[in-house]
Length: 409
Image (cartoon, rainbow, N blue to C red):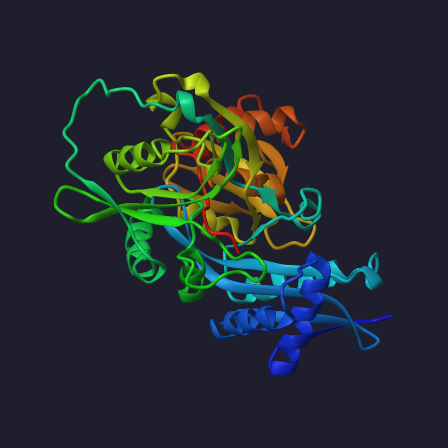
């Protein structure tokens, strides 16, 4: 039975697409809300696809163009993938394979360097050449042990924190984020709809957020950060046992970071503070008077990357010292080749021999600078042909500042 792919164009198409997504992700929100949001994504230029078998809906797929920061501050154009479903009536028929291969081929035609996505389940996308490229930490903090210690280098902080509504945050947040995205590999650009969702002007259907939003300003009154949080209110025996969930903390300076966390950790009537997807190099633990009051609850994979043009990816980023010749294996052929990687430039070679071999997914886990070539080699994901090649690859690609992505899509 042949699988046919249909690009969403009309209002009827959008309703069919949204209905299929709701079925897969078990949403109980009104279908009208999902249709309205899907229409907005369509208006923002997203490419939505419906897969059909003998006229019946078999799957959905959506992608859009964005720009991703690379180590050193360069940028590449990438294909952001989301909204993937395979209907339970049409599993094991090659629906996902058909949709993914079609989208990746189109991305190559658009000369995009890579495809990226957030994976709902870990095992799904490795077979298509994706590798986990960023990671985040989940924190649980005992409010009674959350005091911050006095910095060794004392500085006067005359900045301030104030509450803001969604409208104001929607104007302020992009200014703050632009400064952060410039310096953090893995971050991507956001469109207008994404900022409406980020600032809670608009909610994901069934996930209406009820919380508070604050902005931070420095001594000159310039915005240098913002934070969002909500509280699960709970009391036992007339004592507060509530949990404060830190949803977002963006800070452009160490002073703003300390100011925002000092505010969040000091909120009254709270027993436990939880925060998710914190970047691996966040200094909060080192700022606490009792660091054992903070427990790293989970380390989770974040953004997954599927390289399509290794030359474009490598040429857009800064490099460490040394030189190594790498063979990348890609069953779809998009990224296959032998590449000489060195600080002075990158070149694709005609020869078939190399210092080491890895598949395209492993390369995707390394190229943003967060993965360890040593660890991947120990896991059997890199085949070293010349002694020292893994160490040289690690020196060239690994970065002191780990990549991170704060934009869900």
